[in-house]
Length: 404
Image (tube, rainbow, N blue to C red):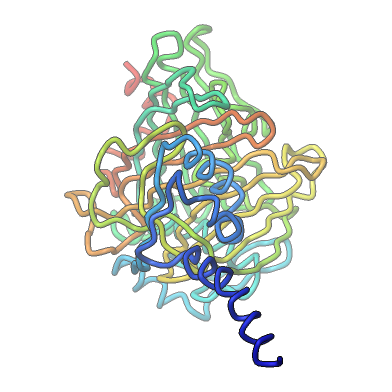
């Protein structure tokens, strides 16, 4: 009788065991519209909330499949790795989140606190080079994934400190640690908003607010923008200046941090540009891999700020501190927006180093509003260490010349 009971239990659990084996996410598995429901528990566990909300809908609508591949290796480019090695043991964070002792590279190879990881993110710029220019369409989509409007714009960033390859190294002459970086974005089309541009100047002093200026073509006037303008939606989209590259908010003395880590399913690093069409609805057709990530919780501690919390997902290997996404919570604690970096690829070209060195040369990003279901997709082609990204461009005069 006992043997029959054991045999019965084995027969009873065989389907469950087979089901568990078939629905485990491992390299070689391809998740599609027909089998995705069996993978939902694992997808919910391994995806960030932003990836889960957009990719599962993409599977339901047959926009995409999710092929699982082996982990790739992302290494810091040699110059960045050399400066990072020089910095080890020389940097520390004082009360009020002030970083001291840093010259270039990543200040903390293995961050032990949230504040250390925050400064690694800000100083490393995802290993993307000393300057970066990005251009492409920002596509606004309704909750069904239909295009409402497309805005072509260009943005650029140039650090005034901490450069490792583009002279002058490591800092602009006579800067003396004052300006951390400058960033601009410029609208190229359509005609009704062409020429609109903004310039942001971020200062090293954690107590000094960033400066932001805008040129409004309809008024033919330059306007100095307040701190709140850094969180206003850009051209009706689901993003703002503080959300660029996952997190552009200034590291001020108000911020507090919490550090955690876990394994996630994220877009694989490519060695060449994926075949087109890669954008369907608000999803990208790419390969995926499981990677260990840092989870950085950022608390603004400011009831007047747009968010009560950010959660940033950061690569834990290779010391590029590549960002795979971020989530923003409103002042009521609700998940409001997410940014999912979709394709951090590393295919070699004349502006890059190839061989999986660096964090990427071509990205796609999805900004998603979890409350309305609206999304904004940025399909861009970055040029890192862009020789045309000169200091003179980072002024209203320089941007107006570029716009014309």
